[in-house]
Image (cartoon, rainbow, N blue to C red; front, top):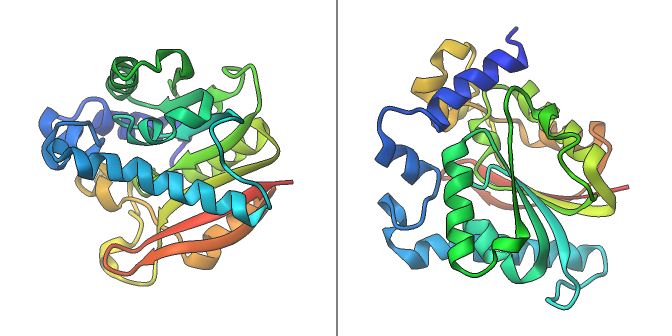
Length: 242
């Protein structure tokens, strides 16, 4: 069994130190690079997240609006597409990443948009619990899209949820996109940490019911599963805090 520090180090080698920087920026969703030279495609990431947050607020009988600013935390903001999408709804937006390059880019991007004051970067130095103690307020909304699939193990993802449960406000909500494991060999989680660099795109996945149960085990109330996409085994989970 790998320890979290070893897993963190292996993941950091890819998401901070990959030898092909253009590839790393594309995979980290940097605006203007690779697939994201199409700015409409880049902005669509944040628009999709905004729609999901609007939906989850409907589930709990509330409405997302710009007059009631919220505290967000995103695990794995990459180049900041979700920050851009939610910029008018946040009084604070914590971005948690293992890559200093990604945090710097997200900060540069949102600062150029005139929202520098809302973004608070948090770098994970050794393991997910590093985040504890870095926040001075509880979070209202947790976001993580196309990130859990890159975690080096299920245990690492479980640790992230454990941390989030400790920093989320009562009745706070979360939107997490995972890759699900339905037996397709392409999307089965890696068995050895040594294969992470080669298989980092499809490193981690959960059975549909497994992640639902993990949310409950982490202290959350799962609400629904949305956007199941069989072409790439994506599924999005909506949940709330107790």
